[in-house]
Image (cartoon, rainbow, N blue to C red; front, top):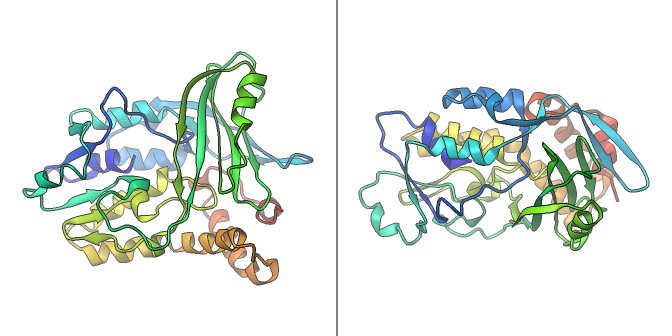
Length: 327
């Protein structure tokens, strides 16, 4: 998404080409296709696209299921959209090298002034990270006349090391998936498919980087500059990187020719991600203490509460507390 969006944001006086390791026939974008309509609509207008044309399902509520209890979060613009069609439309008319590994194309880069690493979790051209936390995930796109839910559902795993999700796509289709550091979703998705008589349209296994930009430096290596998930622009608490990666692409465009300005802008814009990572890492390392972590959690809450349109959710302190302290 970051690369396709960036192709449409680079000023016309520049020539840009894209490299995609999969063939056009086999290319398919991962993730549950959920995002905030009001927020992404404004971003896409800058690239010349009308987001409304791609919306599949407009959510009203999200059920948070703890097994023995559950509650609902009121939604404020959270939708699912046809990410595949939108991303493909953003590539139309652009010079795309389909089926070409970017590492193998290194020899073809001598004529380029700048090389953007928007390869996501692979971080194919930038140096590997010394500290990198990635969450394994698996997702099924399913179709059935017996789907059990009509809106968004998430089920956090104990310890908040991941969650199971159900995102409706309309017309009897949905994305059902889970990401969890302990792989506790194994068998769950197949059980869902069997129970609700689903046709599995596709299975996608893809880890998600939750390491924040602060720990993803260097952003540069020679001609190479990182954009998007390759430099950690995934909101760690939700594992969501669509809007953040587009915002990162905008920062790149705003600072063309000013690497240090871009670096500072990225670190400033995504500063709260480091706080969320600190919280998640404390959970992972089994050293979470509500007493010592409360100032950090409160800071994260106020960030989300002040940016409800960005997240597409109504953020209440009571709901946030229930999720953040789930054991």
